Length: 470
Ligand code: ARG
Image 1 (spheres, rainbow, N blue to C red):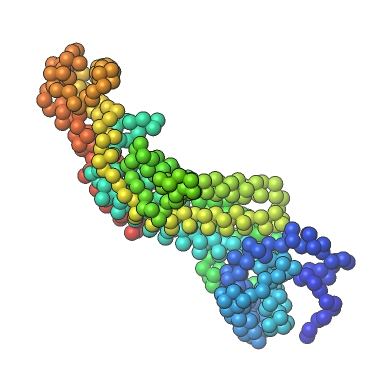
Image 2: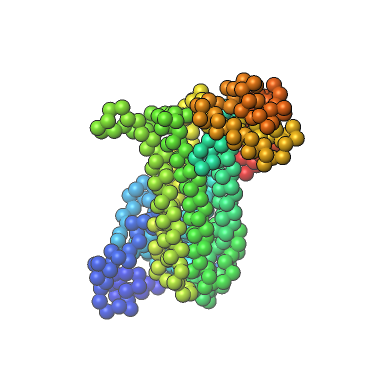
């Protein structure tokens, strides 16, 4: 039976007495960004239609026609031939209209027992789940590239900083391991977030459920959802998972941004610890000598937009009464841009890290400046019986003398050292220089989490084991 009550413009316009204003059409349309969901929209529609058929809500002929029509639409989308129409508002109505144009009434039966409200919530979750898996594997490649670099530099010494001032020597491998910890937590956060993304809203219909004898378990199983959203109102309105994902993405970007800041500093000519491969840098249109670290700078800048998306999503949600409100349509642009920004950033950083040129001599020269082993001298005195506070004071005094004289603790002879530290001269033996050297300093920090090269190698092995277990 075919009803042709009147020529409708929009799927819902039968209730209205005048056409929609062009401006409002543009304002309310989401097709230019939600078409990104097209393939998951079809996947979810097919799962819904199969269930309707099993439940005898639509006929065998209907499901056959729907499968065939959707196959053609998938092809059109993949080949870039599908004509997206602004007047059809969003991805759901565009695909449904094309299906109906291709297969007639069976296309009009697809929407039985569902609403765009549970449809869009299902689509976003399906799409985001795939993107999370993708980001998870990008994070793994990035961690693996960082681990390779750390392994090459388990013995390379540079000054560790606090307050951006020379503090104590560390190895470059150890420094990189700090970032590997951050990106490992990021991977875990993504995996954890995925658990709450992977719930099925479909079946909630507009907000209250449906009177058709649907089988939500079947749909969940077909689409690979672990759980079914338990409350229909929450199912259509919840976007916690989107906020959670964006917060996790903002942390990834924050970590990338911190690393970027260091890369930029390390490439500065006064520091000169590294060089980035030319393909990741740009020149200047006026200064011929310039080689600028644009990629890390941009990554640092793009962290701002992802942080902004997090605030946008939180703000979209904060005033919404139950259940679905059109406000939710605004969730897509921040989410899509977050996914794209984080994915591209991780891709490019993995490549960039592989092409870093490390300059161990510059690192070492810097570590020899700034009394980076002063704590080691204090620790030496403590091991020879002096209370730590007294040792601290004695060494601080010696450092001040050296600063005035323009010399370095490690460069003094034992006699000079004894004369600069008269109160503790009797405690100082020849072995003090084992503590004052950079190698002595780092190899003495030989405990889990310390910077001794052996510990760094152990930590790299442990990080590799975690990487392959995820
Ligand atoms: N494009 C809409 C969105 O993204 C789909 C749901 C529309 N539902 C509605 N009742 N207008 O949220």
